[in-house]
Image 1: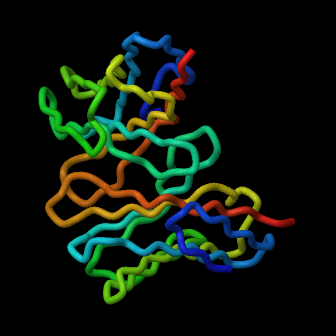
Image 2 (image 1 turned 90 degrees about the vertical axis):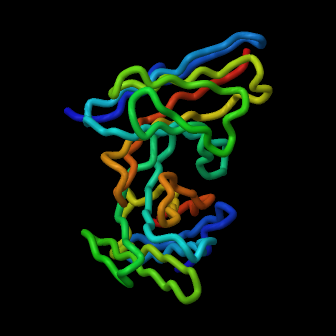
Length: 113
Length: 112
């Protein structure tokens, strides 16, 4: 089945460590997005990519990094510079640049040990 | 029942009643709007979208209404069922932009 796969479902990080969250899609979508969701709040955009080898900062990019080496993959690294990383992280993708909905994976919940 | 979806309020409705979830969007230059449903521990699920050249769009048991004059969007769910329990988000896209801006959501609970 076509879709967006995020792994792992749950992730724990020690302070000072970098961790990488995986996002893979087999929808052949050009655009991919990373969002952060805190309890009881909406989604805030971290980074997005419209095409392979290109990405832009979203509204809360500090302490995060991404790469887009392949069309189907858009990993997110939460660096030690991110002082409050505990959150629910959501990846999305969208076909093309027109007015079309983004489709989401089921998220990764990151916690600090 | 009705609710304004800006501060994650809760809307409680009786099973079988119609639900109306409201959203006040911020940018008059927004040309595309989406409603998402998010169940606990899952990613948002696309429900319905509407472009700014439309006032109304209907799907299966859902209707989205757009009032550009007052920058207001609503989602109507007919004959609400227990499976409709979730948090509902509206999202807007400004013309020419490539990213969505999400509202903070409304929690819909169904009373048996």
